Length: 368
Image (tube, rainbow, N blue to C red):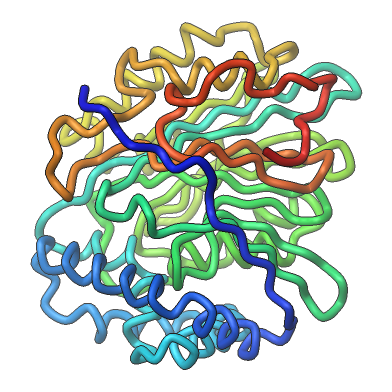
């Protein structure tokens, strides 16, 4: 396990305008070099996956976004304008999961998610490790997005991508795990990152979020674990999106919900390729299930963090070598439904000293 330099803090940005196109343009102008660097890094990854024309696939994805979430299509166009990039290239960033799924070289699995609903009156403990390419370790930020009607979305996302992991001001959050199905990559569906952002923008409850996710029509498989705080139903459901539809995974009777990178529902599991190509997803799931069994009602944030920092089975991921395309945990993210905020720890979780949540009294403290 090689040593990994970890940044002491992460970048945050709050949009000052609320109209989608103007908001996107402000973002693109502010983060022009970062968006360009992210587009260049993904261009290299698309090339390694032997994708013949990623921009053309981006154009097709943008057409789907126009039909399903026109405000977000306007935002993507604004980002492209602000960053001085072709709009199809920024659309390709937002469809990076779909484009990688269409390539000849399958992409890696990523991410370990856990939710403990807690006892009566408690806010859920909800967190994940976001595992991705080392070459994109500096390619993300936390973005706060105001809307014209007063709603607020907060998301951890990549530069140029409209959304990913996040929470809104109503206490509805979303965690994110990639999946792989043998039907992935056929046709062009709504990008899963756009799905995550739209449900964060629009949902007041877990039910509404699931309805939004189920309406998208996707061609790259992904789990969106939707979490509701006390004011949004205090529950969690993992929505497994795949080209054949959607499956739903519920917490166990103690209130614990876990997800890694293989399907837990049928019929999607019958076409799952991940247990063959990357069976570490099975090991990580088993390690967490054994470690956290029976803890859905009383798990603390520090205990959840310790589980995500464990190297058993590769839960906490470090690159095996110093190559630019190695895979590691880029951040550990906790949702804070009480404060309607994210708590973000850059780099592998094992690099952060204890205690991580010294003031915990049933809700995660708001900021670092």
